[in-house]
Length: 365
Image 1 (tube, rainbow, N blue to C red):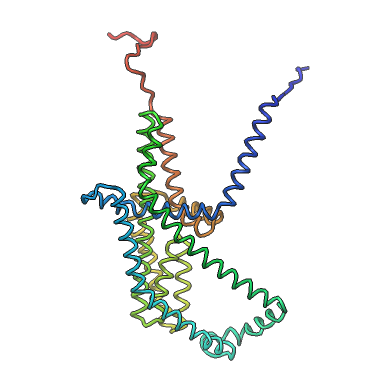
Image 2 (cartoon, one colour):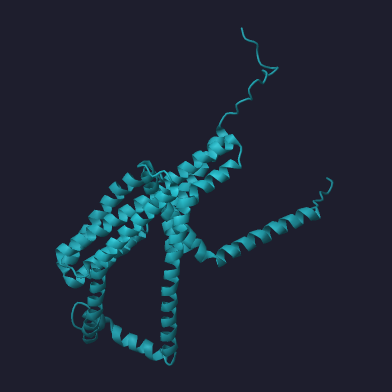
């Protein structure tokens, strides 16, 4: 009979495992509590990566001081945003006001079963169902409206604070980012510092290239859509173009949502216009997927379509829209780190200089 094996654990080892588990749980809890601030930091980081090429270009023009070049780039970006705002915001406000004025007419047509939305009442009795739902809500409607107003106010204040905070963090990341990197590399050995400097450059190209490319592709989609809708005489063309640009930032799902939204608005205006818009989006998506995306991402992220799909699905399930936005650059960065790790493992070991030959090595000749 074989002897019985007894497995024993030292108390110190057990305590060490428990401490690690508790530390990981506490770290995850801390990340969850600070998720809003972490989101702001990530947004500022991506904006800094998008603006850093402009800062470096200004430095190459002769502005040697990093602080002055950062200030010029930041002011240039704010000037562009201000010009776009002064150009499009009045049009956007007017279109939103016109749409709000038109909503009562849409509701009246829907209630009476007239117009293009009348079939919802004639066939599905949508108005009666909504009235029944409101009646079942009872006295809770007042509290619901109050809660909604409070939530809207809180959202507006949070958006203002987030905008100011992200702008400040972006500026300081642009200003002090290279110095932070140099300080961190100075703590490493020279060979390790050179290796991580190379990895950092690849990460910068991957993430920065994605951010710049995504913004460029979204602007092309929004401007093209606004021009088409204006030519077709569709109302709210500028507002819809802005919506398309914002949705196009979300990989995969954003284009589908934009197609559905704008095509629906076109069908409400005219069946012919709606079909033209649908055909345009189908063609444009092919051009975007097979020409713009490869042109922009082939030299930066270098991910396969399947890897992009999986990354976006995981990112969206973890953090919603922001997760989907960050999924591709995060996956690209992980690919860079994995390649570097595999390359380091398979790199042949070079013996130190002056080391003698192995005693078992055959003699020459």
